[in-house]
Image 1: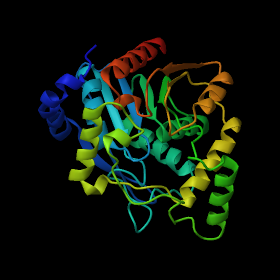
Image 2: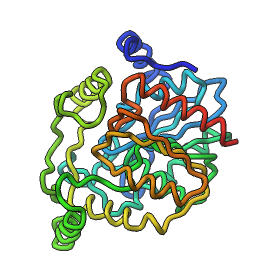
Image 3: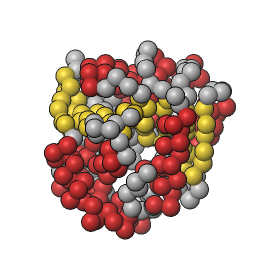
Length: 314
C-alpha cells in the first residue's frame, strides 16, 4: 500500500492539487432544503468504493490528502459536505454558526447522496468511512435506512461529547431550555465565529504540517470556515446521544478510538461496541481527536487497520 508521509507532503502538494482539480468530479446535489457539494473519483483498477462522512468543521477541501491517497491505492472515493458545512448550504444568516434542525437531517442527506450519486457511479463493494460527527451520522444512517455497505470504519465517532467543565446534565438542560425559549439559532455559551487556534493550543492533531495545511486552506477560502455550535445544534445532538441505545445495526463496524481525545467521550464508544457483536474497537495511543490528520506513526497504523478491515468484510 502507498502511504502519504509528512516528510513528502509538501513535495506531493502539486500532485494532490492536480488530483483535486482535474480528477475529482465535483458537483452539487439538490435537496429539499438546499444544495450539497460533493465529489467522487474512480481509478481504472478500483476494487472498492469508500464513501466519506466527515466531521464537524470538515469537508472535501480538508480531505484532499486522504482522498488522493485512497485513489492511489485503487479505491473509488465519494464524499459529500454535510449541510451547514464546507461548500454546502448554510442554515442561518450567519454562515459561521454550526446549526441543524434535527440530527436525522444529516442521515437523510447521506441516504439521498448514496441513492442518487454513489449508486449511479458504483455497483461494487462499498465501505462507509467517517470521522467524529460524521461517525454519528454514519451510525444513524445505517440504523435507519436500507443500504448495501459491507462495513463502516468510524474514526473517533461522536457518540458522546465533552462539555468542557460544565456537567453534562446542566449542559443538556441549558441547551433544551434555550431551544424551547426560541434561542436555538444563537451561539451556545462560549461559542463564536471561526477562530483558528495556534498549533500549540489545538486539541485536534499533533501533526504540525497537517494542521497548518488545514488552517491555510480555510484561510485561503473563507467560504469553508465554520465557527462554534448553536443551542439548537447542541440540543439535537444531546437528543441523538440519548436515543443511541435504541438504535441497532448488524453492519460490521471498526471503531478507531483516540487515546487523548478532548472532543468526544471515548466511554460511549466502548459502551456501543460492547452491545454490538460485529464491532471491533481499537485505541490508538498518543492520539488526539483527528486520527486521519495525525503524525505518520499514528496515521499509518490507522490506515493499515482500515485496509485490513476492508479486506475482512467480504
